[in-house]
Length: 354
Length: 235
Image 1 (spheres, rainbow over the protein chains, first blue to last red):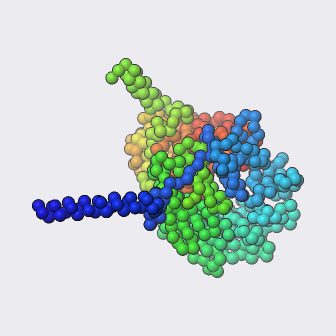
Image 2: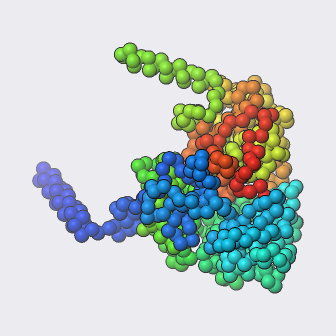
């Protein structure tokens, strides 16, 4: 009996201490010591940008101050890239340009197809010129001074189809075949606009595709690593790191998401501790959303790739707009914001990143 | 139960009955029509399966609208699930085997059709081998009915399951994203291709999510021969 009384007193004391601690934390505005607590205690700043179920595939302007999307808001409005300022949510979208792109990174050049011919337009003065590449889409180099395109074999198994990679000056001159691969193809320009990241087999009967960096000026190739079934390759903004995933490999132990340090002479893929969608926030931070089908909302994590430390930024519940639809999300170039299409209402929402 | 409530209950029962017997065009909310399960017992992931090309007017289907997808009015008339060759495929609902290796319905090298009591037929394509089932045999939802294969017959090119949902006459295909109970929004976040839809620039909001893709009638005219389109119709 006396023992029971002591236990009860002890419980009451612990409860009183917990209440006192809670009040102290509330008064001082303390946020939890762990990242998970931090995410749940601070209210994420979601802002609805559009209404009426508009619009898919939103992306940021280069200055990170506007969200852009392809639209034709009314029957009489022109089709084009429309814009909503991030500091003017729910304001009527304004026409950004009637050119649809693809664009160069700085939005100074736009690509178009006219009469089966590839055309580049300089948006500042409307000057247009034709690229003699058989009406194929091209990818601008980051400095917008070069273009690259691929010519693909049209039959046979996809993993061994021949892909020819061509580079030219942006005015269409100086066209040259810089590489050929079997399966795969060009993945991305590197930020210096002199190197291309490639995947694929150098010879049709090579056993495993290779990830390589090609110097388009001198034609030399640096092989990085052999990767079977490489998918979703994404280069960090400074071009020093690559994230990709492998799925359904013959050797199941190879499946997963990997980080590769491209500056290393012989880089070793580092397997990351999640499987999900990812986007770079900046050169040192990767945002990711783990695959959690059936979860009421998405989780947003941030990985510091320099330290390996992961932090939960958002843990959305059923009432949150943070359930991404259509796979549509983009991160502002300045790393301050994220825009997404919400599965709740099919509108575009903005999240100020913590 | 009061009279209005009885009337409402009768209306609900009537509409449920109609739903169950007459596959309709895509007008209802997906919540009320997600009557089938996924074609895999295992959850999605890098070791099991991932969503590949979705149903509808994908950019990939548009590029092949006059060739591969001509029969389906130019759109991808099923869902592709990426999976290694040999991954067990399960029935998405109770039913009866309708056809085995019916080459006239495509999806080589092997396919299987299951008729369901609600009037739909599910088609499982690009199977690795001829399913060990006979026409008329009953199958249960979740029962293994075949193995995933590769249309290019290499198992290294593009191994996947192609799943269609048709009507009993096999002349129409429905948008399976409405009919299969799955978290499509989560699944859409992952994978590498087949995620975006071709735009008709005269009406660029048309058919832009998996849930607003149109049903098709096999042999009908192309529905995506857009005069002005984006992405451009590159070579």
